[in-house]
Length: 259
Image (cartoon, rainbow, N blue to C red):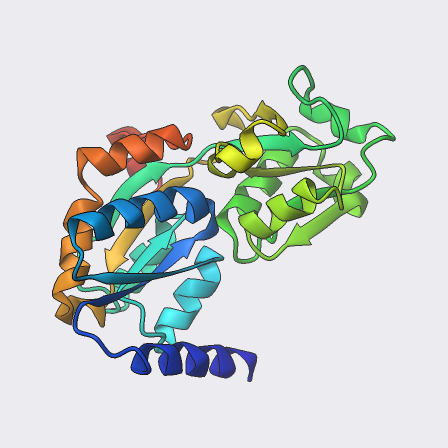
């Protein structure tokens, strides 16, 4: 029932703003700040196109698209979700890898710069936030990290789950938890960078977080979707993504996740 209501609201939003040059994007929440800059740049170069972006959990967006949500493009923090949609016929394009995400252990209460993951066992870390691993890629990788570090079982009772990685970051920023594992891209925003204390998590502790996007089946008929598709592969966008801590995925990493 809740999913049907969400889809109805999205549909009403789209139909109330009927415009051949309107673009509706579903984007993983680790792109919250980077995509805002990207869209601003795109709209400046294409003043006739109005972009509407929704941020949230990659897994939930994938489910919504399979159930008819009218997005033109889908940006996932885990390339496997758009790959699944492509295999099921919900994509008009190839799956394009656009970035590799990094994880950090973040706190607004404790100095994490010289800490280790094992510090989370200490008494001053009573509540630790990660995104929900059932549908959020950063939550899946956070769980992998804690498992690989041999800490998951000991920390389970301390874990608080956010609906998405940006929701998880809000727990930390608002000091509702003592620390959490989130996206480096969210820490790199101007509003967070001066306040955050974080530890960059070694990539050896989790599978690669290769991110990918598609033009959806619906978006295939929207010329503006293809304009954005091309723009996302430009040097200007690559620069923005790098500024927010994303890395360029190499072929080895892409192959490791079946890309």
